[in-house]
Image (cartoon, rainbow, N blue to C red; front, side, top):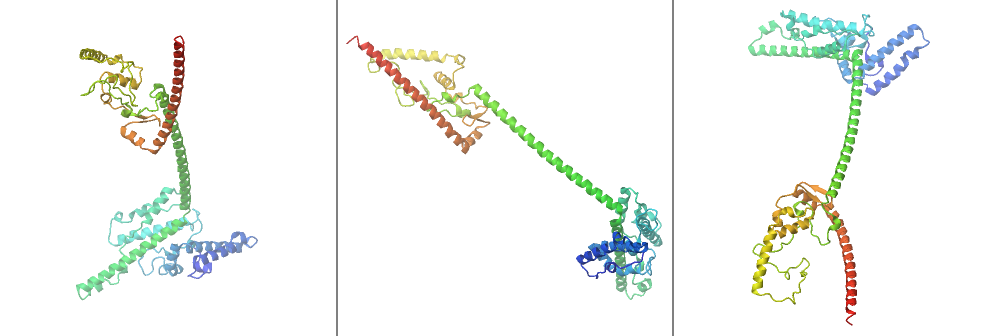
Length: 485
C-alpha cells in the first residue's frame, strides 16, 4: 500500500477551494504528469510520474464529488492516521469493529488484476469478510448461540468475486451490503458502567444514566452503519463491472427508446393509411348511394314546378293536397265552384251562362247518379292504381277514393333525405337540425335559384307554345269566315 497523502496536498489547493479551482489544478497537473509527457525520461522518472498521475486522478475523483468530498473532510484526520484511532483493529474501541476508514482511499489497491494480492478485488474481498467476521464474533460474545438468527446473517452468503463474476452475483452482493445494519450492542460505548449504576443515589438518577448509555450506543451504531455504507458506495463507484453494466443498460435503454420511437412512427403511418382507406371507402359508398338514388328516381328536379311546395325528406316529403269531393261535414262542390290554387275558376267544358236551370227532378236524378258514381269509385281496389304514377298522382287517386293523406302518412319512413344537400338522416330531429344549419340554407338558396330558372324556362316555352296555338287558331277562323263573305 502506498503512503497516504492528503488529496488537497496532491492537487496543491486549499481545503476551502471551490469546484472550479479544483478542476483547474487537476487539469494543470494531469498535463504535466501525463504518461505521454514522460517520453525520453529515465525509467525511474517515468515510474514516479505514473504514480503521481494516479494520485492526481484519485484526488480529483474524490474532491469532484460533493458527497464524497464532505465525507472525506469529516474523516480526513483519521484517514491520514491510518484508522479511527491510529489502529486498524479499533484501538481503544472494540476489536469486533473492523476499521474501514483507511480503505476509503483509492491508493489502498493496485489495479484490477485477479492474481495480484494488492488488486481491487483481493483487497476489498478481505475487507468485507473481516467486517462480517467482526459482526459474527461480537454477536456470539454477547451470549447468543445461534448465529443464523443474526439480523445480518445473509452477508456471509454473498461475496465480491472477481472480474469474471456474473452480474447477478455482483448485483446480489451490492444489494445485500447497501442495506447493512449492525447486530452489535456497542456496550463498550457506555459512559456509566455497572458500578456507577449501583452507586446511583436513587432510581431517577439511575434511569437518567441508562438513558445516556442508550443514546451513546445508538449514536455509535449509527456511525458504524454510515461508515460501512459509505465504504460500499466507494467500492461500487470504482468497480469496473458496475461501470460496464451501467453502460450496457444505457445502450439497451437507448435501443429501446429508438425501437419505441420507430414503432410509434409506424403506428402513426398505419393510422394515416387506415384513415385514407376509410375516407376512400366512405366516398365510394356515398357515390354508390347517390347513383342508387338517381336510378331509383326518387325526385327528378326537371319535373318540379316553380310553385311546387314539395318538402324533402321523411314525412315532410308527403305532398299535401286539398281534398276533393265530399268531406267530413262539408258539401259537394259543383264544377263552377272549384277553384285552383291560383284563384282561377276551373272550366268543365259546359257554358254555365247559357246552361238551362236545373229543376228539382233533375237535381234528384243527378244526385242519384252522383251517388252511384261515388260508390263505383269507392269499389275500385288499390291494386288497380298504376304503380308507375308519381307521388302526386298517387295522392290524387287516394283522395278520389276518399282516403285522407294524413291517414296515409301515419307510418314514419325509415330515413329522411335532403335532396338539395344529397344527405340522409335517421330521425326527424336530425333532419330538423340540418334544416337549421347555415350550410343547408346556403345550398337551399342555390337550389331555389336553379328551380326558378327551370320554371322561367318552362314558362317561356309555354308562352311560346300558347302564341303559336293562338296564331294557328286565328288562321283557321279566317279560313272559315272567308266563304261567308
